[in-house]
Length: 157
Image (cartoon, rainbow, N blue to C red; front, side, top):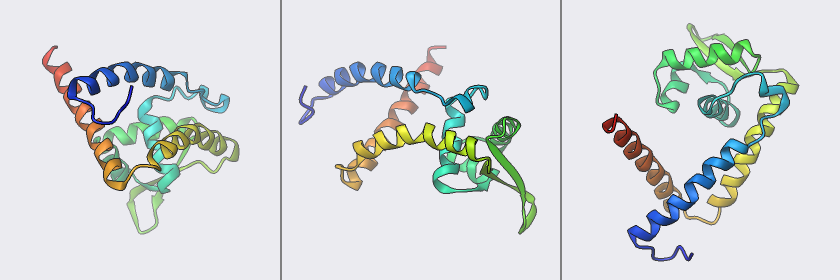
């Protein structure tokens, strides 16, 4: 199907065909052996990706980026810390703040990087030919879809 000049109905049909494939591909993504015992969920993947690509940050910074409460991030950090995926330390500038970083353990760090690399590579190849405006529109569209799907699910009980 050509994706040039799609009507709304054609775009809906194309997305209804692609989304199950996309979801199935995500489910088939191989989790490295070193990470399998950690019971990683998509929310962990999001947090780990921020830490890998943007470096260490505070719980509040992670919460803002993940659009969740700091207590939720604290629970996620606690989970991943127990499994050795992340390290927590006090911020030297303000001991009340906690800095979260990917672990220094080379085996775990490599496993996390390898796990994230496949998805990042695929997104890079998909986004490279697009203009910055087209990339922004794609992200806004997925955000709008997610918001509408969540609202619809809540309305339908």
